[in-house]
Amino acid sequence: MNPAVSFNKTLLAPCGINCGTCLAYLREKNKCPGCRIDFDNKRKSCTHCTIKNCEHLAKQTSEFCYECELFPCKRLKDIDKRYRIKYRTGLIQNLLTIKESGISNYLQSEVKRWSCPDCGSITSVHLYYCLKCKHELN
Image (cartoon, rainbow, N blue to C red; front, side):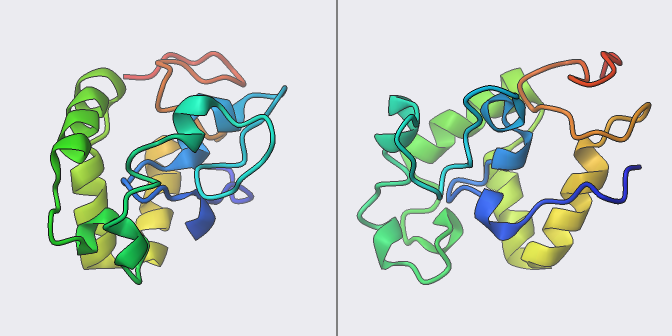
């Protein structure tokens, strides 16, 4: 594992997505800085995200959906289902792990989970191969 690889709290979206594993974050050109950081060329799907812009989320001190009285809401359940089926990660489970284990422990486990077994680079949740060395992932 590459010891220089790490994630930080700003890369954790309110819904439980780790933006550090997103293809838009990992790409070389027009790199997205993550859901929590605003910038001019951000995709519409990110700037208009109903979860990020949720009025209930705005009332939470943790800035994560797990503190909401509606957790898990229909919107979160829908995106969670899509990510479990297509991308090998469950957002609701991610949020529960953050809540139970703390952000620091969760981020450490994410480095292990998303590191390429061949080269140690962070892999994308959206791909089934490593961007750096092209190693196929399970």
